[in-house]
Image 1 (cartoon, rainbow, N blue to C red):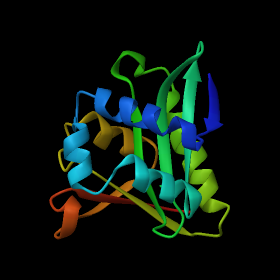
Image 2: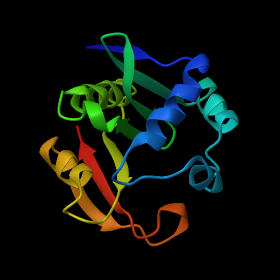
Image 3: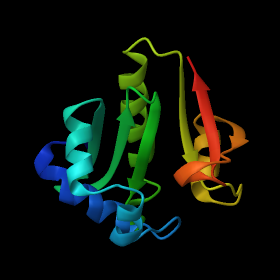
Length: 149
């Protein structure tokens, strides 16, 4: 498996992977309602974000994206047919390492507020701590996790 930094020409791939997931599925329209569009992702990648793509046997199978200003993991998704092969762990490690390299001591992410969700358990397994349910904004009712260096 190869982990590489995503480039502007990979933006469509990020959307394909994001909309392929079964658990926590969102359509392109759902994502656009949150203000996440190809243009907004391009701007993010040109300013304070970095994204990584996991490749396996020449296929792009997952991605993570981190925001330096927000001190958070903005997203991490793996195509369902490639789950359980270590891509998620490697993508999270790339994002965390990048944030830690900026002398950030605490990072966060949000995910569905249901301990039965795979993502919830995955983040716990990687040492993330659930701290509170988001009360406001686009991620209201989602669980906020933090990780400290």
